[in-house]
Image 1 (cartoon, rainbow, N blue to C red):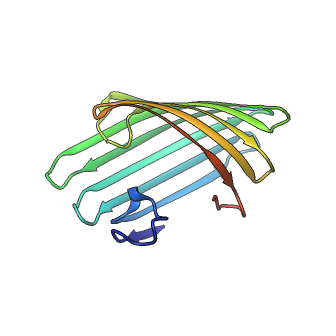
Image 2 (cartoon, helix red, strand yellow; image 1 turned 45 degrees about the vertical axis):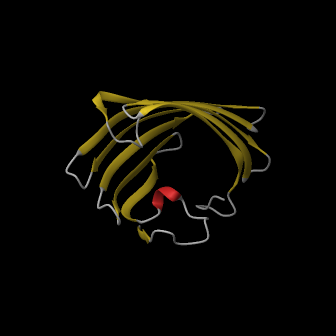
Image 3 (cartoon, helix red, strand yellow; image 1 turned 90 degrees about the vertical axis):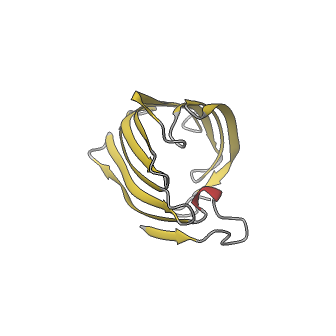
Length: 173
């Protein structure tokens, strides 16, 4: 993919984090067999106003069983700021999810642990996310997440909740 979004484009529906940026990358999933899947992404993003550049790559292996899944992955991100500063994050990812109530409810826990004192990228601090998804239909779910972050730019706690739907394969609203 290749996309560019000028500062202030749209009617407020665009992500503020993508505003004034140019981003190019590749992402994909490969089903290794009926139980294993590999997800990967690599991208380069440039802030058109400041000149800052972020380069990042991540991959996750997921092993699925009948009613639960285990995820293991890694992430690398480097921010090269216009003043010459480089901030890097190297992380390991471990996650688990459990399906309950005949697959209507999914509980999940994910940990992204910075390693080797490499947690300098502001958007990739060490973090833990606990979440729940309740499926109203096969394509529509209620979700709630609680996230705790710990990095050089601060310690945060936050909650997200809402409704998400997948009107067709590959799309989420």
